[in-house]
Structure formats: structure tokens, C-alpha cells
Length: 368
Image 1 (cartoon, rainbow, N blue to C red):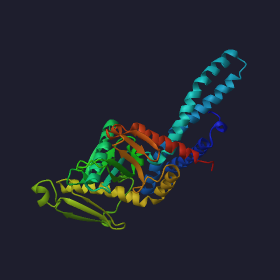
Image 2: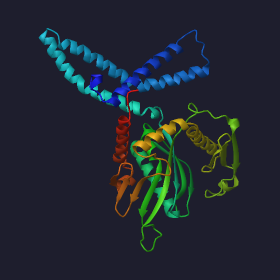
Image 3: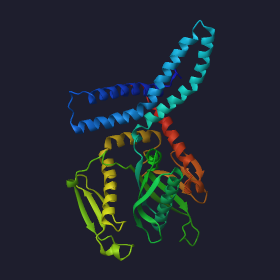
Image 4: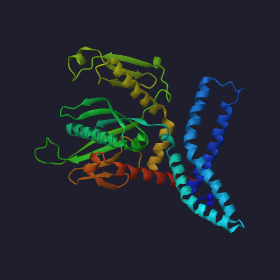
């Protein structure tokens, strides 16, 4: 694979784009190191963030170019009139081949996952859909499935807010999951999830179909998005609901409204008003970030519709069939063992989705 002309069109496109990005990184370094530039702090901070992002993306590419140089040098040695040197170079060349192949695959993965670089936390919102109490119980099952998967990956799982149903399910639950690769892995979980089973309250044994929706947003910290506090209205009230007398008597519930967009977040989970305010701001930043990131989102949705469907809230992406003991992902059109998936053992499923995305993205790339 050391010869660019031997690579697929998609791979060639990526290498060409990375060469352009390397020039951009060099331009940024020159601008930041220019003593006469006198850059404002805001401009300098923006350049530093862009430089850091490019550095992460370009790391495997720079290693690849070094390997290419070694290959070129060894090929010159193979052509040497010294038999011993030519034989040594031939041996080293054979060893470098697999390393070069592995590095180009790493480059492709880094390039295709550029949107996810540096994002290790997400907000997961699960809402019960059609099906009443059974849908709320299913929403609880989904939350538990993601908790078990997060435990397997060593990620942090934090329930930020929830609205319980009468039978112990969730009408809505908001979760924060953080850890290396969390956003890149769970991003494609957004969409409609459907369950087919006999509800515990069904005396006749009839199978019901219920649904829940999952929304996934990157958790945007203050370094990514800054919200002017003067554009946010805060209202406090008594939390109400379960939690004892303190919850009902103290004004601990916090509602934030982002005035320019009308986005509203209300948190009442904690007894502490301070903790509820902190959680509300984290969710608000994620929602406002997603709102204003329309161009990127539109591009990603267009790609997903081409490849695997949009993955939006209204699209059914998966069915959990208890009578058939199988979990069907409709984007892959493949079945997986139901008990395994619900227990949080989701690696085979999520890896298959990521491979499909990678394959289809590459197929859609052309030389600019």
C-alpha cells in the first residue's frame, strides 16, 4: 500500500485532504509564533484549539509519511550493487509492509471520526413513547442496558434527572455517560427503539408493542460553547414528587430558559438547588450546542440517510422481540441475541454498525 496510486479512491482522497490539513497546521503555527502578530486572546485561543485538533488528527498521518520515507530509502538500497545490503533492505521492506497497511487504516479511522475527536462525554435522553406504562418500563430497560454497557467499558454513568411512572418505569430519564470513545460509540443509538413482549399487567398473555425514543448529544463544555448568562432566565420552585418533606418544602427545582432559542431545561432530581442548577446548565449547554450546530448536523444526517438512515428520534432503528429472543437492528438488517444485548454486551452490535458506517463513508468519498 506504499504506492498512493495503489490505494482505493477513498483512501487517496483522505491522504490528499490530510496533506492540505498539514499545511493548515503549519500556517497556524507560523501565525501563533509570529512576534509581530499581536493576536487578541480570543483569536489566539481559537487558533490553539484548532491546532490541537489538527495535531490529534494528523498524528497517524505524520507517522505514515515517515514510514513511506523509510520504504523509499529501502527500495533504493534494494537496487544497490552490494548483495548483502540489498538482501538486508529486502528483509526490512517486507517487515515494513504490514506496518504501513496498519497505519493507513489508522489514518482512515482518525479522519472519518474527526467529528468525535476530543469528545468523550454525552447526554443520553430516553423518553417513553407509545405504550403507556409498558413503554415507561421499556425506557427503564434501555437505561439499564446502557448502564451495564458503560460499566463494561469502564465509563462513568450518571443519572441527571428522571420522571418515574407509577409502575417503576421512566416516562423520561436523562443520563450523562463519559469516558474514552463514549460519544463516538453511542452516537448512533439515537432513534426509535421498539419492544415486543407480554406486559406484566397483561392477564391474557397477549403480546404488546411499545416504543421509546433515544436522543444522543455530545456534552459541550464551556470551552466549546459559551452561553451568556444574561440570555438565560432561571426559575426555582419546589421539586414535588418523591423525596420526602425536604423536597416538597424547599425550592430546590431549577428551570433554565435560553431566551434566544426558547430551549428549556428543568431539573428537580437533587435536594440541593446548587446541584440541580449545575446539572441544568450542563444539559442546557448540550441542547444549545446541538441547536446551533445545524450545519454539521444536517451534513451528518444527509450522510446517514445515504448509508444507514438518519438515526433521528422518529426513525425506528431497533426492535427487541422477547417472543423470538432476538434484537433486530434495522439499519444493519441483522439479528443479535436479545438477552446478551439487554445485559449490556453490545460490542458485536455496535462494532457492526461502526464498520458499516466506515465502509459506506469511504465508498462515498471522491477525489476533490
